Amino acid sequence: MKNVYMIGIGMGNSGGLSVECRKIIETADFVAGASRVVESVRNLLDKKCEVLCSYDPSEIASKMETLSFKTAKLPFHFCVVFSGDVGFYSGAKKLSALLHKSGWNVIFKSGESSFQYLSSKLCEPWQDWSLVSAHGTECDIASEIALNDATFFLTGGKITAKTIVDFVLENQISSRLVVADRLGYDDEIIIDLCLDFCDEKKHSAFVMKNSDYEKLSEMKLACVLVDRRGFKSEEEKNRPPFMDSAFSRNFPKKTDSENAAESEKLVPMTKRMVRSAVLSLLSVRDGETVWDVGAGTGAVSIDIAKSAKCHVFSVDANESAVNLEKKNRKKFGAWNVDLHLGRAKDVLPDFPPPSAVFVGGSEGELSEIISIAFEKNPSARVLVSSVTAETFADCVVLSEKMNLSMEITEIAVSASQKIGKIHMRKSENAVSLILLNKNAE
Image 1: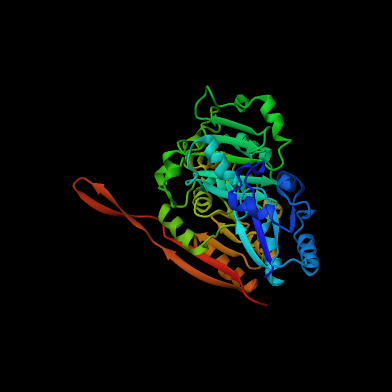
Image 2: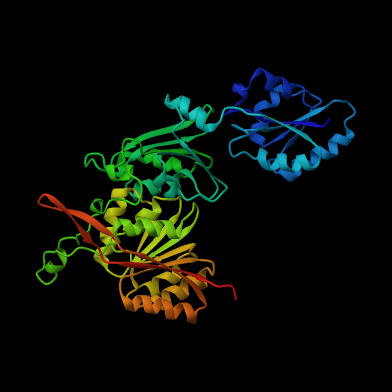
């Protein structure tokens, strides 16, 4: 039997190895792994043990296959050593898949992971942390922070500790921020900060010392914990669709008499019961990109952003509405909403391809909006909100012209209103939600 052990040595050096893992490494015929990991166990190796310093799965698998035919001693076993835990976003996954195909018996032996080690250093349990890998893989920082109470990021590659810290500081996200690098080594670094941007005395990026901030650029494989427990607003603690009354709707106050009237207006908003239907019809999933056109207060954008780990790009031509949505985004912690000011036909071409699109207001550009969406992604789900006969008619014409299927949902909501001792039904404006999909050619 060709046995290979995938051994996680824990953080830093091999001091945390179990007696069993230590014995496996000491009696191994071959040991492979990244240079710094192999060096940490070299003092345990038999003099006859062959060593390969590499983290390339194909190179390791090829070397092992060659040695297996040359090894006279049977039974024999090989080892591949990894830092941390082989079950936590480790290179062991890819390597073991290659070895299984070649008939190897792969055995996992996990060491202490980075989140376990940091948890013990902070003297608190990690059971409520959401564990996310940004180590050489795509990761949406905004959606993770927006939907998790406490997020532990394993960084490396495009996303570094500095990337995450800059995002938190730029968006003034109140949280406990912990940055840890070279865990388990003699020169380990743990920066532990409380960022309270609701407290004027503390709300400054300068709470991080310049010397600490400069270190961030040097950290390549650091861990970052963004813990928002204890910092979330009451609005954030609820689930979408959120109450209408929770959203700010007044335009920012203006002092000049010419524009004073606008300050008294309410920004148009899709009501909660309609937003509930929007969430159901669009059925946004984790990892998707969503457009919200004519966002107004941002109620739809925020509901969608807080319903899945997606990314929402919203656009509105009214600057006051965009500023208001910015205020609501912060109130609900919807950091995965990107706000854009401008006419839809000018802004949308720069957006990434959408999985889903909600059109709450088109400013006469419905044809251009739908065309751009389907050009970007022919499989997009486009939902148009219509309160006028004209918009409804436009959808019918466009569906025939552009070869689109059309599914219509009528929403007519009546809510009770207490008048004296009785409750009367007060009707809201009826809304047509028109779901458009591109037919196969």
